[in-house]
Image (cartoon, rainbow over all chains, first blue to last red):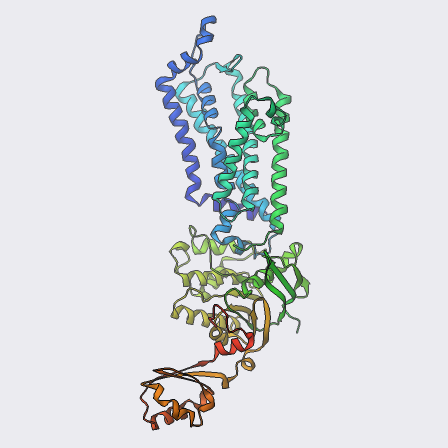
Length: 279
Length: 310
């Protein structure tokens, strides 16, 4: 199993396009950091208009923690695409390349092959999230320094003391990794149904976009289904920046995401076990 | 001797089209088993079923006496295969491709074995090149190296000469014969070209529209009396009457302006040539080949076959 996993990881990281994802994360983080560096004060003055009328806000408002939070919000829709690029290619890419039939002439069980490929996708996802943490958090802290973080919400604003933030980010990154693993499982499942990776990648993104819109629409008719949509729970990482942290809701979201992951993976194995390889 | 592979009543239907229909055969150790049929006859589908890539609707496959299923894929460790195009990871080197597929074979394979198979297929020295830079022939050879690397008992080669130039075809043929003779491999090889099968196979099965047409020893199935001889001759039509009145009358199958075609034993060709010269004919070329198409059509009784590459 370890040997197969090493092979899969080797294949992922020998493809130049794998590194495009890391480049995109770096580019987006850099652009936002640059924008905040040059026009951050105006941005924050506008955002905190209502707050400064009633409170006297002092100190380093535009600090590394705040900039990281803004980067994470911006990357919410991009990271799933980058994860889908690799996970959606998992089986369909091999089918398109013609190597799937060669792989499956070997005495390896199909279920094991799916699991190994999925774990390799998760390793890639974890590395991408770690890269995000490094580029967003560490570089922002280096450029903008530390400070208390102002979390502006639609109905409130929360001030988090600087000594109380780092653990929140670590927890948020772990939660984001879980959410992205769910996306990887979805893309992997769609990949099993296709013989070309474009389809699963686009479909994954389509599903994420549509369900995210449903999650954000404040219409009563959608409120019934919202708790069951994985996109509702993908933004659970934001809970770590509330005060107090809604641990129960975050745990609930984590369980839902884990169940979705297992479900997607189960469907993938069940379908792939019976699939005729005609590519 | 127990067969390595037994296919029993294999049937596979795709969207109402019966690709393979009640097909049974067996391959015994030492065979070079030719699998012959037109494009779309069901060869690749059958081979994919033998490798567990496609699941038969009915029938079963026994490998060394054990039934092949999803839970018995370990049986495939005794088989090496190259199915249709030799597709690999183009962005990796030949060595990396070989190493990857060797690792999937389920047993530890030392680097020395990798070098050995590269030597056998004639790719030693090119293993560090990326596969995307390989020619079609080199890819085919690497595909065979991958099939060979775990020392399987049986090799399944699906149309290994496809896309190769004449020299590549000759080299591939020599390689297949060498694998059988020098490395004791049992080989199942498919082709839509009877000539290719005739050159290498000891036994063969002809498949048409998914059904077995005939199976047996190649030397018994390909009757030497059924050789087609094409004679390039100036104004061939003028010989029509002379041929009709000669001993060759029953051998004539076609006469065109420049070509006479006769079905006969190859041993009679010099005698025919002498007769033609005596008749004053200007013979510019004589080509003999088995009446492959006629042979195949006589087996299939299907003169309207759309793709007659046989």
